[in-house]
Amino acid sequence: MKFNISLCFLIFTATHLLSATVPEKLSVTLPSTKIPQNPLTNFVTEIPLMKVISTGTLPHLSSVHYLRAQVSKNDFDIPIQFEWENNILMSDTVLLNPNAKFLRNLIIQHFKNRHQTPIQSNTATHSKEDLDVDVDVDVEWIRAPSYDFHENEFSFIAKVKLPDKSWRFFAKTIYLIHNGYLGFQILTPYHEKLATYHKNWSQALSIKDSIDYEKSSNPRVRDMRDLLKRWSIPIGATMSESTSESSNTNVNENTRRTVGVTFLIFSILFFIFLNPKAKDQ
Image 1 (cartoon, rainbow, N blue to C red):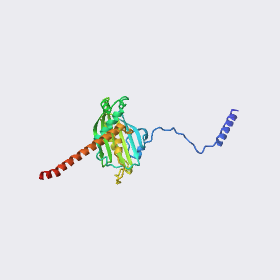
Image 2: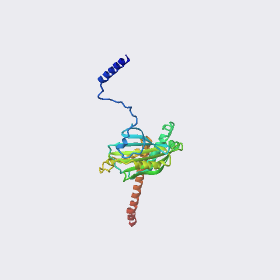
Image 3: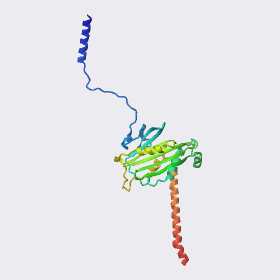
């Protein structure tokens, strides 16, 4: 009896297995990954090991892309950031002899604005002189702004002293590419080894040959003065009104200096060419 029941069960199971069909297409849903893509591979052939935090475009400059990342070195994390912009014509003329004093003033003014208290930021009750006294910020160049003509690379390294007497390490490198630029920045509490890390990173980012910068022969190529101002402050920061005032002050000083030199030359020429005639008479 038991044998007959087992035999019937086996026949029933075999019949259903033979009649069953296997779907031609099997779909497998994999869990989505939240790790941001690394678009830097479009610009460089070698990227040192880093953890990508986020990517996107700047809210006030939709044409400028950014990437935030982190590098672990000697038991501490170094925050790094990149920005790049495409489809713009650029000239290196302004970068050949950057005004280090003017760029230093821009950095100082940016960090002053950033560390003002709500009361200090109220310009209705505080003058510009009061803000300069209350918010003590200083900048020391570790490497003054300079442009490497052969590497098409603009860079600087600085120590920024904040009102609480702490120091920040602020370094930037800008690589010119054939249709725009790629920028790299470290902004973090100061450590003496960071200058070496920044230099090593700059050297490790090997720009692809296909996007290497070639100086444009077009005389109407884009003026880079505004870009240079933006490059002097941290990535993503906006040019404030006080920064613009600093810019205007610098222009006025240059204008006064030019007028003074012109007047001096005119005076010398006046006495050289007119005084002898007066003596002859």
